Amino acid sequence: MAALFVKERLVDPYIVSVDSTLLKAKGHVWHKSSMNKGIVPRSGIDTDARWGFSHTKGWIFGYKLHVISSTGSLIIPLSADFTTANVQDNQMYNPMISSSPSLSPETCFMIGDSGYDDHKLYDLSNKRGFELVCPVQRYKNTPNNRLELIEFYESELGQIIYSWRSKSIEPLIEHIKDVFKIDPLSIRGYQKAAAIVLLSVLTYQIMVYYNCKTGNKQPRVIKHMLGR
Image (cartoon, rainbow, N blue to C red; front, side, top):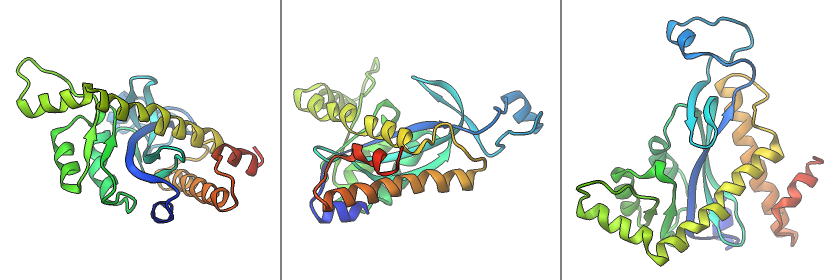
């Protein structure tokens, strides 16, 4: 679906954005002390779920949705993956960009938050022909290659590019969660949860594509199309 959006010029792949969101597991939480001992103290615990931390939400017991999105006038998910909540964003970056057919030679910038500030990810991005733009930490003896990244991020152009993150992928993820009611999840088990979440993303893509082909480029009507 993502490749179709790019091929038909419905989205501009020049700047794309990557992010993730934590999804609460259904039922009771499995406290780490019991988890480490292999003890399931009560029924109704999703034993496939794990603990993950978010600076905005704190500790969440559940799963994580990873998304690459377009920016610009039409914002859609271009790629998505699903993991337990303890998987770090930088661990999923290479699988995400490797499996996304929508990242074309026209893609010049990938926007990410500080969780993607990893020199390996900058190298992977450059090999794919685009630049990763994210907040870069400045150290006491920051090497020259990181200083160059900092200078670009703090430049007027870098800030303009990064500003698209809050206007694209952040509201997109929240909209998908709201439309399909996937946080908290309504089902237990990794495989079932992954199927529900990724099917939600695919359905969103299909419905936006339908809207585009019928002359309605406002994805917000999707909620009404689903009768929600």
